[in-house]
Image 1 (cartoon, rainbow, N blue to C red):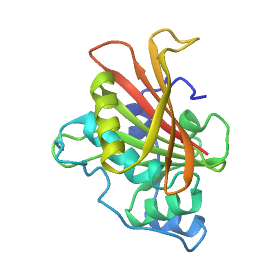
Image 2 (tube, helix red, strand yellow; image 1 turned 135 degrees about the vertical axis):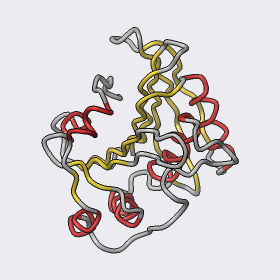
Image 3 (tube, rainbow, N blue to C red; image 1 turned 180 degrees about the vertical axis):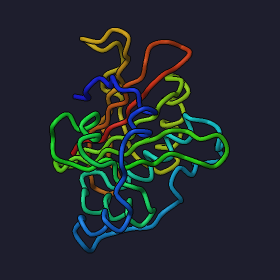
Image 4 (cartoon, rainbow, N blue to C red; image 1 turned 45 degrees about the vertical axis):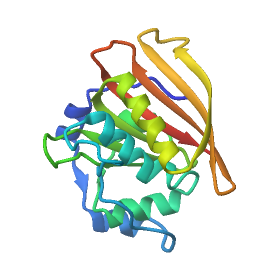
Length: 200
């Protein structure tokens, strides 16, 4: 289950010392897939200034593409020169679990603060500082369909503990690989922080 996000993403990124990409690559296992679309690139013609398109696009490139493939995900992050957020600032996203957190802020057009969270367990999340929930869900569903991902919504409604959050859970699969997904957004129509997660 996704953990409710209660962190000022912009403040964390401003305060956090960052490891250079070379350090991330050195800390990651060798081998595996890399490459793909540029970080933050939108899918299917979305605007570079659209947080929903940017977040969904990054999620497709990272967490969906490398679902349950921690090694491949971290190599991709190094290949795309994402900088690792240095401990203890990564604790705002890892909650004491082992893993790595990468700053994936999109800089084309209006900057959109984004983070990729890679847990050692294989869980992967994309966090966006501000996006409208309905737009993000519509965009993600469109991107999943365009990529040929077979998915089923298994839950969609208010969070059991945090009533200002709304969760949508999925079962998903592609090319014989299966995983679970959860998208957590704020219920406020004006939008707010959002987290998209894949779990093995």
